[in-house]
Amino acid sequence: MDFPRLRRVWKRVFSLAWPVMAEQTFRTAMRTTDILVTALFSPAAVVAIGLADLYARFPLRIGLGLGGGAIALSSQDTGAGAAENRDEAVTQAILLGALAGIPFVLFGFLFGELAIDVFGRLVGEGTSPAVVDLGSTYLAVVFATAPARHVALVGARALQGTGDTRTPMYVNIAANSVNIAGSVVLGLGLFGLPRLEVLGVGLATAGANVLTAGLLCFAIWGSWTDADFAWPRDLTIAKQLLIVSAPRVLEGFGSEIAEFPFNALLLGFGETINAGFQIGRRVYQQVTGPLSRGYNVAASVLVGQALGEGDPEAARFNGWAVAGLGVLTVGTIGLGLVVAAPRIVPVFTDDAATVASAVDFARVYGVAGAALACFSALSGSLQGASETRIPLVARLSAMFGLFLGLSWLLGRTLGLGPTGAYVGVSAAYAWMALVVAAGFRYSGWATRAADMMDARGSGPDADPEPTPDPQSGAESDPTPGEKSS
Image 1 (tube, rainbow, N blue to C red):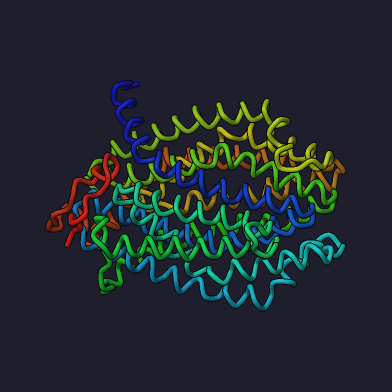
Image 2 (cartoon, rainbow, N blue to C red; image 1 turned 90 degrees about the vertical axis):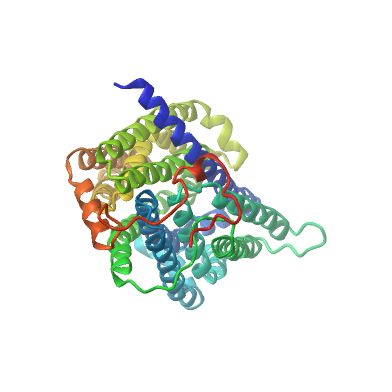
């Protein structure tokens, strides 16, 4: 092992990842605040937010999918010095994201109540009227800003692909701070404002979505970032965006679809079991989610830029280095969570049954932390190489075969109850890590990336365009006025 080289890569990982970790900390803190605030209302409010959030993740998955295409092309074109191709990819991805958000606006207003009620019907019981009312209200408000959510996700990842992970951090920290304050003030009715409870929490989230999208578009359009908007002309770029993004969108959709019967399974064990799952997973995501997301983005940037520079060996080394760092850090924190869960969970709720369930689920996710970090880093590496099909296979086979299938078999068919779900969740994440590790080791992702760069004119035979140092955004803030033409 070349330890000096490994240290250099890890240093670059941290320079790229810490802004992503910081912004993700605020994002997860915002979601945690939502759970804390709604827990003050009732267990039904927690369940309603958790169930509605399952639907709210579909816009998230589309945004992350298109953002995956944007970060892949952006990082490769930055490494290759193809600034014009990069800017056109950024623009096309943002436009596609905005258009893809429109159907969610209609769904939220027309089918919100039916969407929440379906969970109870999956296990032959009706969902409680309180959960349906609260969940559908929250869903309609949040879905109204789905186009803005897409634009925010795509814009952030497009900038990250250039090596500028700080501008998205500034924007997201500001917007999520507004969101946190809004959830508390509007939800609880502070400072003379009406107590809107779940509606107030939804309004705060919707407002933050619009603010984030607006600030990121302004940053790209102005002189603050190296990326710029460009008039869409090249259909090859649009095609490649969809080729890279589609498996990521399908991966996310499949994962969320599996969550529906899984949540129905937990509701069949009791409302407190489902509430415990929502809280236990939130605790895990709060303490480890920022690191995993940071490693995912850093891996995409390092692998993509190395391939753009024509160095697949460096891309391969970088990918394994990020995965090793993720397993070491997130795995250690996950084991700490196993020990600390009984002291952390009561912050969210004082209901004894819910606390017991949440502690168990937090510990399950803590044990699975190393596998999740490995999957996140290596799927990011494959994404940077435009290879998103392998993570698709890994996640869908795990979610339907183990997360849902094994949990249902053990928990409901064999009568083990929540214990069956603990086993299914753990097995799913271990399988995901194994599949992407095998794919990164044995598949021809470097050749695929080179072929796609050649097709859009960003390969080594294309005329190079002047572009700033691709690492500059990772080391210091972009200087106003340095936007590429």
